[in-house]
Image (tube, one colour):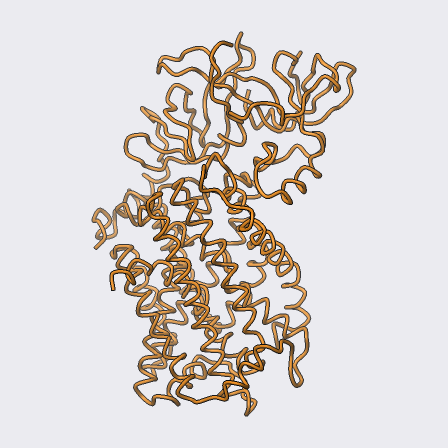
Length: 113
Length: 99
Length: 409
C-alpha cells in the first residue's frame, strides 16, 4: 500500500467509534535482513491524530519553540499511538483497531530513536 | 524484537525528501510516495516512489537530511536529459566549467 | 581584503534586498515624503533578516539543505507548491524590474532610451550566469554595489542639520498631509523589502555553492552580520539624502534620476559617475540574485539538479528555467511598463510568500535530527517568533493597505 493513500484513513476503535485519522507511520529498522545486509524498516505502528490529520511538521515529537508546539497541538488534539499488533484490518478509508480508545498511549511516551 | 533499531516516521523523514546519488552526489528528485507491504508476515517498507520510478528499499544506502540511493538501472533524470539534449547542449559552453 | 572577499555573499544578498531598483526609488521616495520617520522600520527589518538568514545559513552549513528544499519537505507537496508559486512570482517580478533597472542606469549614463538597452541587459545577466563562477560573481557585484556608500558620504557632505534628522527618526508617524495609512503602507513596503524571501533562497543556496560545512559557521555568521547591516545602512543613507534635499521643498521622488541627484549635488560629475556605477552594480547584482533564485526555488522544489557548482549541461532544467525567466522579462518590459512600478505589485505575492518561507526555516532550525547541537536557543526562538508574528501581521495588512492608499499615492 502507498503511504499517501494510508495517510488520512479514519481509525475506528473496538467499539466502532472514530478516534482520529492516520497522520504518520512509525518505522523501526529491525525488520528482516535485506540482501544489502541492512535490516528492513518494519512498520511498528500508526500515529493517530484526533482532529486534523494533516502535516504534523514534526511537532508530534515535541521539539521546537514552545509557543508553536502549543498552537500545533491545540489544532491537532490528542496524538495517539496505535501499535501494528492492535490493527485488525486496513480497508477502504478506514483502519479497524482491536483496542479501545482508552488503551492507546500518547505518542510522546514512545522512544524517539 | 531483540535489538533496538533506528526509529523513523515515514511522512516526516521520508516523504518529500531529496534523493541523492550515493556515489556522485547528483540530485535525483524527491520522494513522492512510500510503498509499504502491510500484508507480509512482518510488514515492512518496500520502496520509495519518485515520479514514475520505483526505488526498491534495497537500493537505499542512507537516510539523512537527504536520502542517499544507488539508482542502478533506474532512470531518474529523464527530464533533465531531455532538456539537455534538445536545448542546453545546443548553446556553446554547456559542457564547460565556469570561470 | 581577503576578509572582505569572504563576506561578499552576504553583501550581494543584502544589496538585492535593500537597494534593488524598486527599493532605490522607494527609499528616496520615503525620505522625500516622511524624512527619517520610517528609519526605525529599516532597523527592525535588518534585525529580522539577520535572524532568519543566520538560521538558514546555519541549516545549510550543518545539513547541506537549502531553504526551498526544506519548504517542500516540511510543508508537503501542496502547501509547498503554493509557497513556490507565491515566492516565484515575487522573485520573477523583481527580476523583471531589475533588468529594467540595469537598462535605466545605462539610459542615465548614455541618454539612449532604456528599452534599447534592455535586451542587452538581459543577455549580459544570462551570460554571467552561464559562464562566471559563483564566487567571482558575488565578489564583483557585491563589492561594486558597495559604491552606493557614496550616498552616505554625500549625506555628510550636504551638511544636514543632524539634530533635525535624529529628531525625525525618533518621532515616528506621518507629517503634513500624509495619512497613517500611507505611512503604514510604506512601512510594510520597507519591512517586506528587508525580509524579501529571495534573500534567504539566494543566501542558503549560495552557501551550498560555496560548499559550506560545519567549519564554516563563522564565515556564515560574518556574512550575515556584516552584509545585511550594510544593506540597511545604504538604504538609510539614500532616504537621508532625499530627506535633506527634497523634503524641505516638497519634491516627490518618482524616477531613478531623482534618486541619484544628491550624489551629483554633493560631488558633481564624479559623484554622479560613481553613483551610476553603484546603481548599475546593485541592479545587475539584484538581477543575478533574482534570476538565480528563480532557478533555485523551482529546482529545489522538484528535486532537480541545480547550482553553478556543476557544468550547465548537468543542471539543464535549472538553466532552462532561468533562460525562460529572462526571456519573459524582456517580453514584459517591451510593453513599456514602468520597471519601478512592477515591484509594487510584488508586494501582493510577498504577503503570501513571507510566512510560508520563514516558518519552515524556524521549524528545521529547531529540529535536533537536522541540527544536533547547533539547534536554536531559547532567546533566539523568542525573537524569531516575534518576527514571525510581525511577518504575519504585515502579510495580512499589506493588500488592504495597498488598496486603501492606492499603492501609496
